Image (cartoon, rainbow, N blue to C red):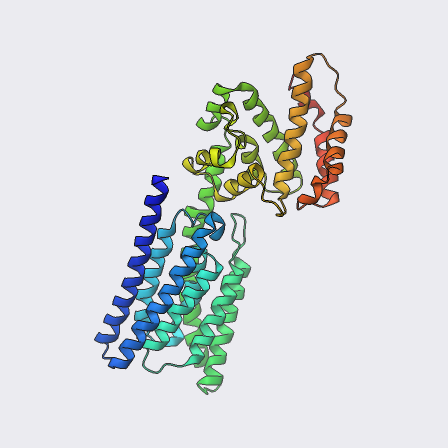
Amino acid sequence: MANENSTAKKIKLLYSVMFFLTGIFVFAFSYFTDKSIEAIIRNTVVSLMMSGTVIFMLLDASSRGREGFFYDNYDQRNRFVLAYIIGLLLSLVLSLVPNMFWPYLAFFVILSLLSNTEIGLITGTFFVCLSVMLEESSGCSELFMYVLAGVVAIAMFRDLKENSSIGLPTFVSLFMQAVLLIAFNILFLNRTLSFNLFVAPFINLMINLIFLLLFLNLFGVYVIRKSNDMYMEINDPEFPLLVSLKEKDKDEYFRAIHTAYLAERIAMGLSFNARAAKTCSYYHRIGAPEGKLKWDEIKHYYEENNFPTEAIELLHEYTEPQKGNVKSKESLTVMLSETVIASIMYLIKKDKDIKIDYDKLIDSVLEKKMSEGKLKDFDVTFREFDEIGKILKKEKLYYDFLR
């Protein structure tokens, strides 16, 4: 609890620094670029209002925990603050650069991937507004152009995964930016169609492309792939947390190992999230030897060992499902796998020489879940449910190793 309070205080201090630096930087820049007193006051007040809005959205997202942010941004909020301050400084400098060369498309993507869609959109819009307010011949046309291009870019890059292709999202985003830039030249600047008309948009696209590729490469290595590396580590049977379970209670350990095998087979066969299902199978009963099975009693294990966000969310859903919420396919996979394994282990423990009709046992488990109405609580189709049963029945040879 003390650690959580300390972290909360640090975050609030970080946001306070964001707020005051915004006012100081904008005031100083407006003053040293010889803006009128009215313009200085306007720029400073508007920037503080927008910064306050961004901070409010950050706090609101934080109140929802890890679900309020993309990826591991909840645990790494300093990344967004750093990007915010860099973006703020660049937005001031860009007001001195012709607006045809502003790389705001990349800014929108970076800010959203380091927070969430809404925060990225509002922050990006703030920076464009700031550049427009500070430039000598400001107008709403460039604001409209860059915000619209930013919205499209955020939509294109909003769900990046390790195997995601960035080719199409990059092409669509840059194509939209090019169309808007050319339209801006023709409709708002009244320029005639010529070769020179395409020079500035081309340079703008190259700048955005460089920013995007550099950031996405770093983001893939240090954020997306880092999660995959963490999965490989915690899903290793020799991971210290799992080894400690083996030392405390071998029955619980083997139950976890066998459940994870089945859950992974099902998840891979049906294109579910296999690595998260495996993690959930291994660790949802990590506190069982001490009689600790409630979420509040075991969640510290996952946080202390830096489990990926999606794994923690699945463990939370499986351990303490929220009433009225539809549960994931992965939760059903783990539940059915665990029920089958626990049933077989129970029968073998009673009689080592017992002959088990695995098909009949699996049908009994599935029919019971159906009759209890539990299937309606999961985001799964009848076809997927039938496929799960088929995969479970294919593992008869594996069940014999449980003896």
